[in-house]
Image (tube, rainbow, N blue to C red; front, side):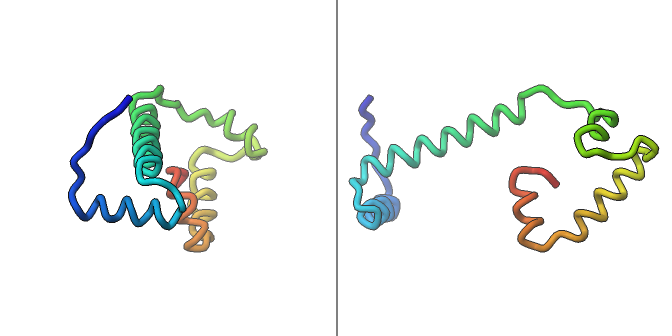
Length: 100
């Protein structure tokens, strides 16, 4: 499919600069950027409209080898303590996909 776009001068200049830096043509860089953008939108839509997951304490115990005697509250406190021990880099990496 062919689409003609009128880009603002600053966007066009940035696109050409990126393409030149990568040794590619501007059209292929534009297609790549659009594809990445729409892939991200589709992923976000799936997260927002996908099924909600119920907290399953027994599944969490099995997955993380947690002792059966710990309550949900004790597990939550242990998780908060573990998060508090993360370095800023580890925390940023865990926040990016929404793990914490």
